[in-house]
Image (cartoon, rainbow, N blue to C red; front, side):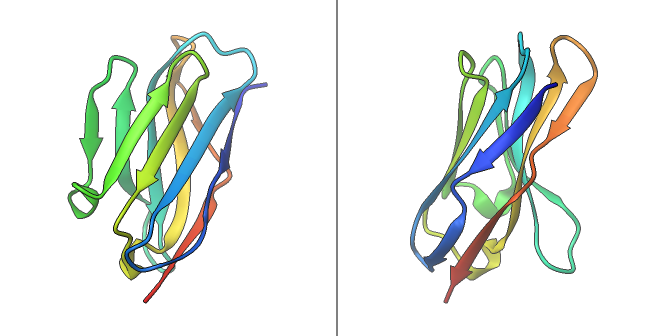
Length: 118
């Protein structure tokens, strides 16, 4: 069984930094797209950043210039470096994987809480 396991959330003051990690476990050959989404209380889940297997990135406007997504294809892992954090970045962050093992399989992590205090 394949799954995503996240780590790295926590509480940080505004202006601080956090790094999220997500690793896929199980029988994985390739993951085409990996990314991060977030959901704040009372809001819908929204895209934060995605990164394709070939290195193409996509960032949501609110995080451009502050967040950096990266991945290690050999480890089937994706990371999110978050700098200059703002209170509005507070949310549960979810790791996502699309097109797993050359199929339409999509995976979600369990979510990790990020709280930014003002």
